[in-house]
Image (cartoon, rainbow, N blue to C red; front, side, top):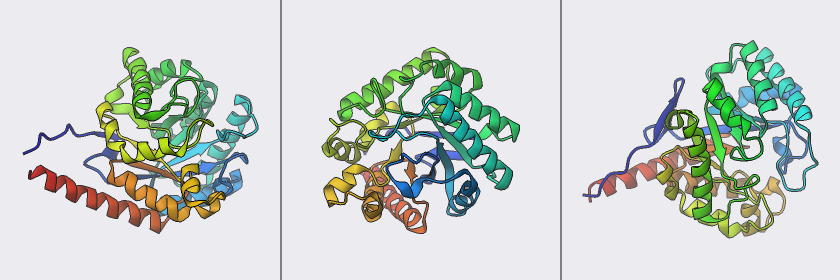
Length: 300
């Protein structure tokens, strides 16, 4: 018999995330025209209908971002980002019943996060607030103290100095571990509030597709951190490089293939532009195959 690994689970409100729960889907809603995939960019007016569709198609999270982190995107001030997100949230909550769906605010700045949290309080939705910081607390270290004050969950994407600049498994785990330790030392309940993202994608020029393939193939290595893993692979550049598809519009099938591998290798959340029946089927089947492998290994 093999020694069983420690299970990784957490519950946010009534949503379970981890080994004992279904793989969750996070729908991407961009309100910045600089996004690398134009199919994910929405106007504030269109957000309620988009959100309704994603919720109907089994999204557990909606990730709302007001700036593009694509390498060649035009710069956006925190003030501009804040205005965009507040406008989106006002439209969303005034026109759509988001029920118990968690709203993830994709920002690196406390100013933006505080404003978004305040907007959610206005609509009595603050219990469903999440922060998605792609800088791993590097851009605005004051976010760590603020998170302790509000006691809300955070997604930490690996970064050393700027978003996505961790290279290789070892460095990626080190950078995530450092951010987790920072929060833990401040008294933040990291075992109940932290989700990790290994930063798949060409965030910096040095990040060759081989780094993304390594992370995807060795996703189980991140279990050492004992945190649920989010895989953000949707239409990313490594898919385009391998399939010779420069246009993100042409990367849907490749995304489904990569999603299946990510789930089989242990992803607990899939962040995607495409909350569709095909994505859900892919996730369910890959999860069941993984469960079967786990059962077989437990018999050894």
